[in-house]
Length: 124
Image 1 (tube, one colour):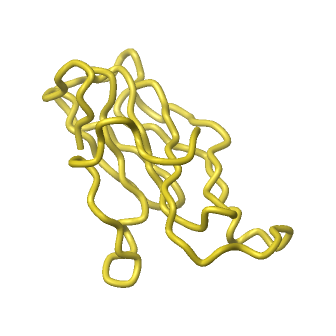
Image 2 (cartoon, one colour):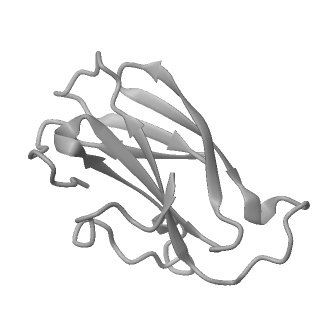
């Protein structure tokens, strides 16, 4: 997990607009020629989403456990900005690359196509 977006992902990620499209604050892209993926969350830079692990629910479905610290009553004052936080996970080894990979995070689901990854180029 790190602040910012994955290197080279600028053209793959769209500008988040939480007022017009609340779902735009969580985006996923394929990394490293398809061996890993990133979930990019957008929120307060001082109270970011923090991933605490992941669970493979099936070969093509990964659940990411995450906490939105903005909603944590123990958090100190949070800045009202929109900063990216990247969470990187391995693609399950027994994934069926002919099917999309479903990623569940913070009650939302995203799907990734796994059969179009070029080496070291992020894919949406």
